[in-house]
Image (spheres, rainbow, N blue to C red):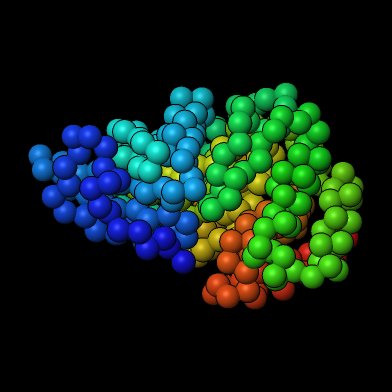
Length: 293
């Protein structure tokens, strides 16, 4: 359910005059517009809700970190304000192609990003994942970080409280207690944090360009696992190319079901039971809990 906010003058930074604007579809949290300016140039404008006063600044910071630290291609940040992020317009703004070469290049790019390591999990401050704060407090323990900051932190959100019962919550707590048995600690690396198909674009030369980050130092497999979950199936060339540069541990695909609890909970917490696909997400969550808790 994309934010239905319209692009009005109150959102535009000083000096930015928009001649025409069209909505960009594909996300579920904030309104985005492809805009032609009065000088004929084009930009992308993303709007923050009133309760997200630092979203634009933090997203700009995340794009810079991915580019400067991790070497990912990201849109250039042109300007930001408390309600607006203005970005370089990349390609046509459409969804990424199914081309195997595009996805192989994306796999290599993400593997290089994950070569940036940290001794701790987290980030210097909290960020945003969709409509909620992403808790990023530093922690040397990867299992505790994932349990507390990426799973249990969603359980007090209204959508999750409405959709999940006491048994679901108790099962998730048991599963979190078992994480050291279930998931190997592969160390903290720089992650995009919201790496699903629709957060990639094809640049002017056909190269993969990454958008909408929720950066932190976390397990690399969280990024890779999300590519198995959200949206249309990502071509296998992505995973094969990734493993050429950074081989994943055996069994990672099965363990991805546990890592993807974060995204399932994010969608459930945001939209409860009413959103298309959420009944299936709740069923998958319960299946994972039954198997691993």
